[in-house]
Image 1 (cartoon, rainbow, N blue to C red):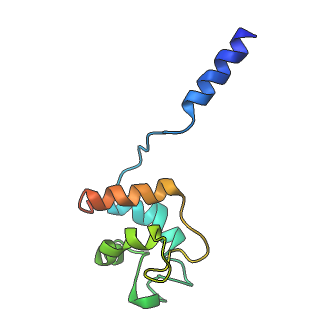
Image 2: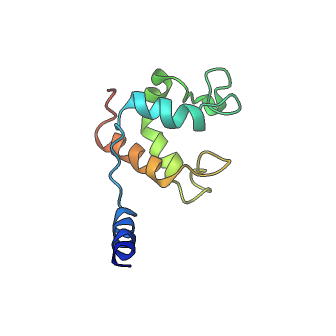
Length: 108
């Protein structure tokens, strides 16, 4: 019984504030977050260029870096529509994009 309680306590402590050890770099964010979520054929791909924004290449992401966090974290669609349109990114990804912005958009 004590062991079950201890395991439950350890599991509860382990939940919540997980440290995100993913790199806040242009390469990682492009490949892991933006290309699959935003740089799709229907939206901001090199072929489609919706709103003339490209998010499936490092160069495209760098050219649009200043507006990415605002678009994925927007809470007022009248000012900036929240992207992606089909549903928000996980908060962990939004937080990583903010860290990338705060660090000056490091490439690697």
